Image 1 (cartoon, rainbow, N blue to C red):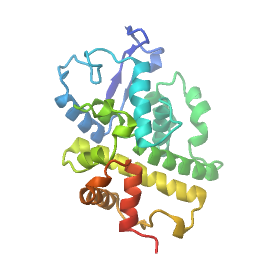
Image 2: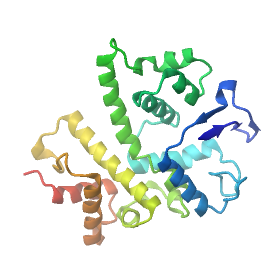
Image 3: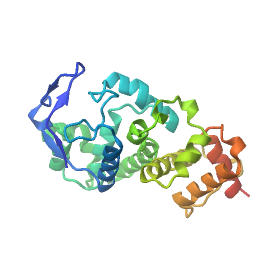
Image 4: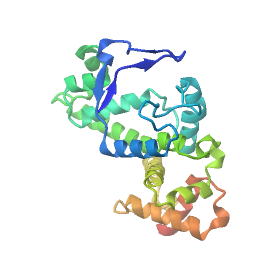
Length: 265
């Protein structure tokens, strides 16, 4: 569980959450806990009283700097747009609802001051006989958001990994970078690669569906039974066999690699 007991304002002042409901416990997945522990061991600020995600001096990170220098850079690298920082909170709440959590539980996890606030904002997402058709549409939207956010799933990992990779501009994240990440056997790098390739696949599938692209005009034609790991293997093999092409973006390289492995005949 993540215990929310304090917050930091724009001036670096520490205080309680803005409401009593803000003091709460939020569950963390086993995968996230594993990644956080791995990051903690790698960080030079690993003492019990240290911040988990500090700035270079071990202090609180400036929110504006974080958004401008890190978050927007990560979105550009992931090639996703129009997702502000608060959208991640909405996504989390929507997935809790989709997972079947009760309204009162969702209220507690989100830190809403009352159940009325939760229902006013998210009531249309809770299943009911009247909303069955609407939930079908909403679930498609959540699935689409999930695919998109998978590409941002490596956000914290890339930004706080013990290297200068996160400070690079989007143009620096070429095939050479992804060959190193996806070719590594480290758990952190594997998670980053998996999220990125999943995002590329998801973006391709959504664009094909949205624009109703004819089969003969598609970049590749992988069937539904092609696993994510197979896609990663195809991508890494192409980068290994074609080092001269690694200066291109991952989107271009992934499309070429998949096109060669799964041509549209």
